Length: 490
Ligand SMILES: [Cu+2]
Image (tube, rainbow, N blue to C red):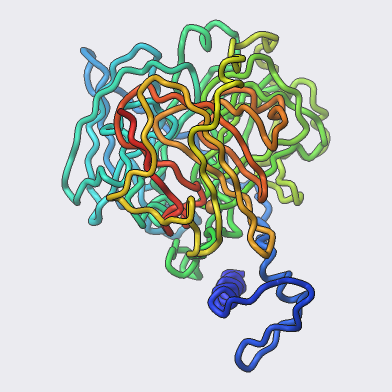
């Protein structure tokens, strides 16, 4: 499969270089000795060809990331080290991996709203890296963008006050041109923010028991069971046939007969997932990237593009467990089998009112003051016709002032592809998708948004802090290929 993908990528590059068009009125395009017909071209250029994931056999209990303890009692001080190590992902074989405070992935950092947090970040890798806090509202110099590289052996202490509401965020590296490879090798960790509201809602919050993080990452392993990024790399987004959840191969999750909260994070370089239960049962979504929805939204499936999060609650006391229960992907591949124990857990209701998120009339009536056009594929990706330049500031915005950004995903001749668009340092509100109100389950704080080809979205965004922040496509290879710009908040 890896070989097939590479060939596809190569053919597409050749087609771009030769400047061919997929316009149906044109005759077959000649490429040196070989000739492609339109059906072949369509197949190779539809962007849709995605290798399926292998089914999880469920032979391994899901790993739950450890919760990172504070270094001292006086203040909240964490130490986060980026490290290289070996991990037994496959029984009896060690794979070379990266991780935070360990060999693979990272611990979960739990903050309370109002906390002043200090994090000592240390680069123990033999290459440059940065520590980016995805979704966290912090000053630009604490954000860990590509200007903030730590050389091997260097360390940096950042300090910030947590002022945003309860949410599930994450952290990962962001060095220019190297983000995709470092995340692929295992650098990713979770941040939970809790506040008075999240603690009073009576939601499942027993970490690892009925409050479960699920970090979805697809990978390709070579025949020595190694993550060989250079071999697997695809300029249009590296995908793989092997799913790891929280780093666990062939995971299963054992739950009690109760409502279980699943915090879904698409931590993949490029793959989109549409999650559903194999029974066809519904579940409720309770949170978006940056906070709770006002009320639970009942869904049968939910799509997350890279870096998006959603919290959902599945009621295992109501599901018929005679069948094999599993979380599956849109195409039916089994992502996470569930084993439901006989133990009935706590009974609880999900409150009808969870938050007071709103889009104001004023925000709706603001003019568009920033326009972003996403375009291209492979290494020909641009924002407003330009590739990332660390020396260029693309936009400026005033601290504390809400502006409306309009983001357009301009299709190419082959139709284009979904780009997940992320802005650093802030949570934003979706005002509209193609002029329409966003779906119910997107009426909450977001820091990443999936944008379809030819779709225009409007968002209202306010930065609470100053600094230079990135905005970019979260297909990590697109980001590394320059689909990124900078906004300076003054
Ligand atoms: Cu993209």
